[in-house]
Each structure stands twice: as structure tokens, then as C-alpha cells.
Length: 277
Image 1: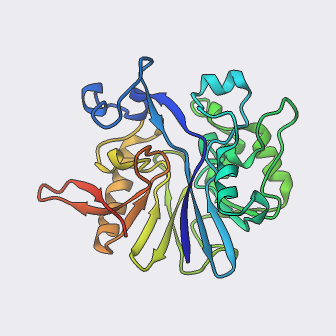
Image 2 (image 1 turned 90 degrees about the horizontal axis):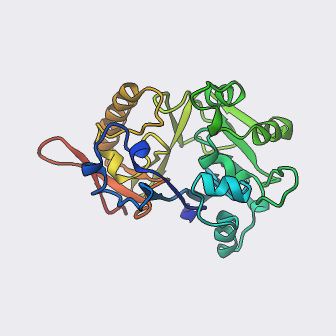
């Protein structure tokens, strides 16, 4: 099995929104804000090549936004960075067999769409099946007013029409290795799938927006985007406790500085990560 982190388009978002009720004096030590109070964020994906399959965990934000919307949402690059990253591996989107979507927010699924060219939205990854949580899919179909802007209606329609959408309530579908595992989280958004991959170094958890980067490993730190912060904290605590017992690690989608880390806990009971592998 070969695991390759792939960069997608990067983004800048408001630091206060990314760190919830943590004060700026604290979170600015984690990620330095710019003059507009925005912090740098990755939209990182993970390519897993195993047993004759190429499995991509998420697609990042992509480049589907028009120039005006790209500016509004702080997307840095105009080109589709994930496609460039795949090309560096000698691959294209057509070579991917399965795409796992932890949830359908545009910064995790927007890379499924071709770069903006002024025409209709176009779905990439023509040979892939798309795995998502059933509750996450239902949320995308009928979003709440609070998170409606986080979904791309054109993408949802294209996925629905593709006949390649695979929904899971937490069970591992036949198109994925049966020794993998899903954890289901509801604190950030309903039905978010967190993929746990067994590796020789220990289980690696694709932490999605439960733990977007190393600063959020600290249990009380949440995002303003989380719908139920207290639920998320409880989910995080339980998941980290179990992962620590199995000497596992975390893969981060949004951390601009590190892709992954091995979970550790200090003498005061505080979680953090060290080098993975």
C-alpha cells in the first residue's frame, strides 16, 4: 500500500471562524493572521494505492469558483492544483477508482468539478465511484440555512445523476478495502465519514473537519463552522482516546504546515502529535 499526500487549492479564511471561541491571543500563536484577519489553510487530499485500486480521500476546494467568488472565499490559486498534483504522480482524474468524501462542503468536495471557464459545471473523475455518508448526503440535498452556502447545488445534481454515488451509514462498502473502517461524526455536520486506514506504522485516521489540523488536536479547540461544538468535543475525545490506545495517527486536511502526525498525550492529559512513520 502506498499513501501519498496531495495538495489541493489553498485557502485563507477568517481566523476567528476557524478557531471558534478561542481568543485571537491564543489562536494567532498557531496560525499567524494577515491584515484581513485571515489564516492560511491547506485543502489536502490523500491518495492510497492498494490492491490494484487508486483511492482518493477528498478532492479539496478545487478551482470551480468564478474569479469573483474565488476572491470572496479566499481561494489562492486559479488553476486546479489537485489535477497538477495527480499529474506529478503520473496520473489524471480518470485514473482514480474511488473518491471518499468525508462530507459535501465545497472545500472538501469542490475539486470534483473542473476549473471555472464560464460554462456549466462539469464533473471530473469519470471512472470513480463516490462514497459519502448517507446523512451527509441528505444534508447536502436539504441544507439548513446556517450551512446552505457550504454546498454547491450543481455538484450535488451532477453526483446524483452520475449513477456512481455510494452511500454509507458507517459500514464499509464493497468498493473499498474491508480492513478499513469508518467513524461517523455529527458535530461538524451530519454523517461525516472519518476513514481509518491500517498501515504498518499503525492506524491512520483521515480526520477531515473533526480535527482539521494539529492545533485542533487539543480537545477544547473547535471551529465556528461546527454545528454542535460540544458534541464535536465529545466525539473528538472518544476517538482520540481509542486511537491513542492503538498507537495511531492523524491525517490533516487543512493544516498548512504538516500533513500528518502520531498521536501522543502529555502528563497533563493534553493530546498533541509528533512525527508520523
